[in-house]
Length: 469
Ligand SMILES: Cc1cc2nc3c(=O)[nH]c(=O)nc-3n(C[C@H](O)[C@H](O)[C@H](O)COP(=O)(O)OP(=O)(O)OC[C@H]3O[C@@H](n4cnc5c(N)ncnc54)[C@H](O)[C@@H]3O)c2cc1C
Image (cartoon, rainbow, N blue to C red):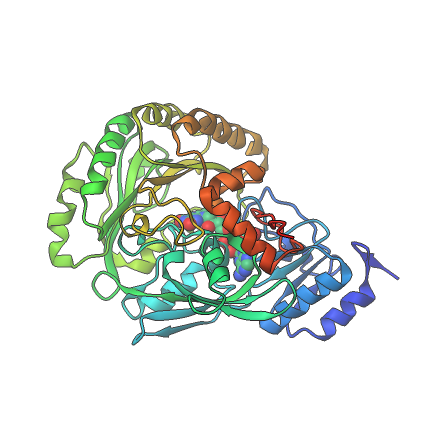
């Protein structure tokens, strides 16, 4: 009799018999494809992967894991840079076939199955001139992003993704199923809004939507400057941003200009500092609102133009396909200090590969008006989430990009607020998880004790159950 991670294949036959979805074992065709995640550095060998078709499949997997002592992982879009959707010897609960969305234009809501990526949600809502806050890349999974916080173009105007979550359907560690909302399992609902995958497997989310732009057409795109102007640009940006109407947001980056249209060929491969802007207000006010953005400095590129919100959301997807090597380090920042700018100037000049970059995403406006303890996401100080990202297609460059990101982070960290966005952590240890949640960690540990006392869901940025008895 063959075994996989100590379980007989007969046990998996029993699991397979109760599933609507597919059970994939190491000997099966498609196993290598199924175990691969977005970050090409991750090379895990799960004991089995279940591509779930419905909540019942998720329940069956959770019960199987408990009954047979098999570690469980949960995979949404597979974008975790730390590779948390898969683990050696575990049963991977793969939600990627759960891709349905249902928009209610009257209620301004969208119900989203947990295997959707943000492109699915944007596609569904922008058709109605609406969007719900998400991130900056459409290929990212809804599940991981929404449970960790969700920082994107709409955060200044409408808050984080978690601030727009209305309810979630959840399979708990004991295999039971609940709906969490402000009026049902409200402690769980609080914890899900930033606490990651610690409390159960979410099978569907319902989000509030907002009218954006003109019938979903916004004005957005990059304004890029020579890398030598980094100091001047960052000082201007940090003063300007708080004074801008919340319909306009922009994240600042150091990057290499991609070798593709719409960028002029003579700029391809040139290092730059720049801001990616998104204006979601009425278009007859756009000239006035964008005037200071267009008037500053000597830009190499002014790429602002009307476009469907879906186009801006997916603008970087082709540049960052699945399977590249990724290593990132991150922190929150209350300010972009002069000392920080010196570090950005230095490491921006030394970008190790064309895909490597540094981003600072604003968490101000509506996102900062939510109380620190209103959701598990604790960082509401009105600053930025920064992330230093080493990326390259070639595994031979894994060490080079990791070293650059670590060195950059080590010099920048003293200027930070102390902790990082939980969705931008690698496997950095318990102190960094605590720092991400600040004063909310202990309350999260109590909710964990109530809903997952055995820490069944621990392949994540783990909140350890408080021992209350
Ligand atoms: C290219 C890129 C761009 C990004 N841009 C942004 C951005 O703009 N804004 C932002 O906020 N973040 C961003 N992120 C970070 C992103 O939020 C995290 O990587 C997130 O974990 C991705 O979610 P996923 O479902 O794709 O991940 P997965 O790897 O599938 O899962 C990550 C973690 O979430 C848990 N999880 C996922 N789905 C569920 C579920 N349904 N129920 C319970 N647990 C679940 C998993 O168990 C795992 O621990 C980006 C990441 C990448 C790689």
